[in-house]
Amino acid sequence: MKQQQALPHPWSVEYRASLVETMPGIQRFVHQWLPEEVPPCGRLTIVHGLGDHGERFASIANSIASSGFAVVAVDLVGHGRSPGRRGTIDCYDSLLDEVGNAVYHASNVAPDVPSFVLGQSMGGNLVLNWTLRRPFEAKSILGLIAIAPMLRMATVPSESFLRVGRWLAQRFPNFRISTAVNVEQLCSDRHGQDAYRRDLLVHRKMSLRLGHALIDSGEWALQNADLLNKPTLLMHGCEDTLTSPAATEQMAFGSSNYSTLKLWPECRHDLHFELQRESVITYLLEWMRKQMYRYPPARQIRRDLAA
Image (tube, rainbow, N blue to C red; front, side, top):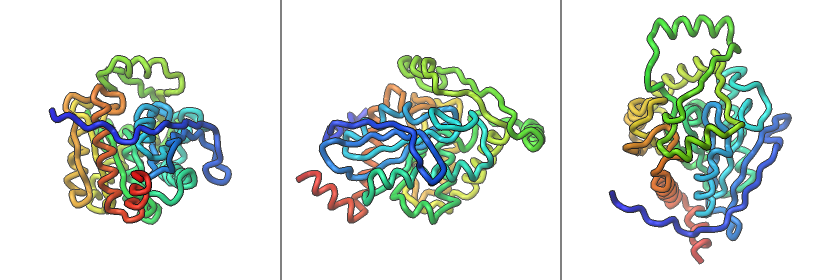
């Protein structure tokens, strides 16, 4: 395997976290990682997965911030330290609102620099659908990254099971089911597995409405992949048994004019906790920089950083 080059500019990183008003009347718990010695050369908004929260991305966020980017992760409604009943939603569109609000809040943290949005698992589903369904809002971003996006489950339920589930979801939309997973499905690194077990902020609940919204929205994104018009990096672990690597390949094929596909052999669902995570982060940073070189204001920022 070709050895990755070390990340340039290892700046010190300042971490901030607090409950803030991301939009009028909407409070969310926000995590920020900011380079201390230099103004940010770009910003990255992270959208986490189901039952997860922003602080679990601290490792990847620190590495990216130490390379000069402002990184912002917002605990979605009903997740982490944000208010809301765990695992329930009013409707799928309200989750797309969460993405738009997070991106807007990040623009106030680090204005006037190239913007990227990263979604993992459920977050990957959300950032892809947000970009496809709300292109006007997505004009503010230069590119998006979807890691192990929840477009289709690795093991697809039968059609009869889905019909029964939809019938129940219409009648009992907020009934919650357990989404507990074997931690060995998440990553192969035992330290990452132990961190998940010890994390008291992770929840393992999902309402019937949310479950079927994610299934339907994943299929919709696959069927409308040709509408994608933003540079997109799609990454998936080849040994993921939670979300489907094949569906990510299908998404890349359908949006081939704008998508870059990177599959990671011997990796599972949480690439940011995998043994190869440093290579994952390096690849991600190189892709982001490649997009920035095509963006004139970013070239000036990078010249200032190098001075």
